Length: 498
Image 1 (cartoon, rainbow, N blue to C red):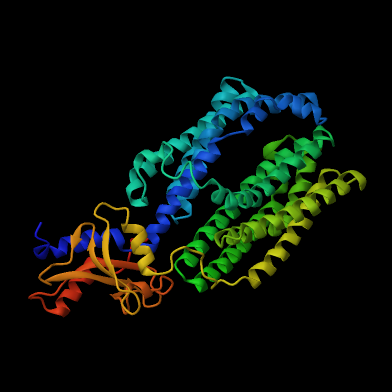
Image 2: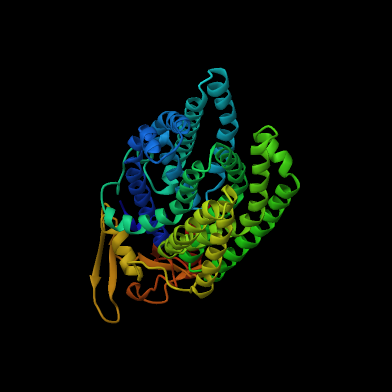
């Protein structure tokens, strides 16, 4: 190849490889973390527990009928947990890159179909609780297949191979220690909230079948009302993380405030509906009687307790976007298990409030969590630099190109000049001086490409988060025209926003 006559093509090739440099590295890391997390989630230790849950529930003192019905559901649901975990991993991978529409569409489609699956297995085949488990299994499998097919189609744009969507890929079997160091606090943060309600269900079981029926039915409706908060929390985590990653701290702070305000408005509408329509809502689940009256009482409690509950959930999402999982998991463990669980037990059993006591305790505990999260968010430094092993343009260049075919060749003059690039991906600077490798940077404040004002060793990635090496022509070309040509190659932004 006569490189002296083809710098535009080389420039496009290298710009595509290096432009959005830090993001390209982050994207590769994100793909590896996805593969690692998905593989770890596949190690499903919970399945044996679910398959033999009846003896465990009986030992915990649950009623025999309750234990058998729960076990029937668990046995048919357990095998499909693999599909559920795969779907959740793919959905979170997309959502954390602000690709939220496809998972939403898939959820809507699968939710509509789920009604049909329930009717088929529970009513038509008369399988009862086992049928509900089969319906869940079919729904989770469909969700996984749909989202996997979508990710397979766009995999190259996400920086991953199509086969890696279905099979263990790069990063699945390494760096588990570093991954689990972040993942375990995140699991504690997200899981402790849901585990608490499972423990509460066990406690309510000791109160009798009527309180348990009311508790389960009310929770079904509460789960629906909580969905907007789950969505807002996921959006807050993704947007806050993205803004901090782009070195835009003020926008990250704004997204936290917007998320809380949106949740307040949404919950006021939901709570008003619950207070005005408590009788109709309870009537959807059960016939008139003692259970229905108890459901109505629980709905009234949660109409008020739901505001701090949804608020703390969104605050924890914002902290998750900041990478502060440890702080939020500690708050959850203390507020839920150190306060709510003991308070619920005493209110329910010692003060005679029954199942309502447990729901009162949830309002108390989540209010405390909101206060603690408010203090943390007020004191957190949004402008704190995001931790990274890469800080200079040279470190990024070396990491991205050293393992590529053709690699990178350079002279290290040290001191004032540092590393001077001689060859990239096998393409050397023209011997006749007709073109050379020039460094361009994208300013985090100017939001535009410009020629690097300093050597690559001194190019700070916090100030210039994206870099590009471009073949710059010098022979028989007007310098201004060449600058315009390079900027056209690079485009207005370092990458296409999703």
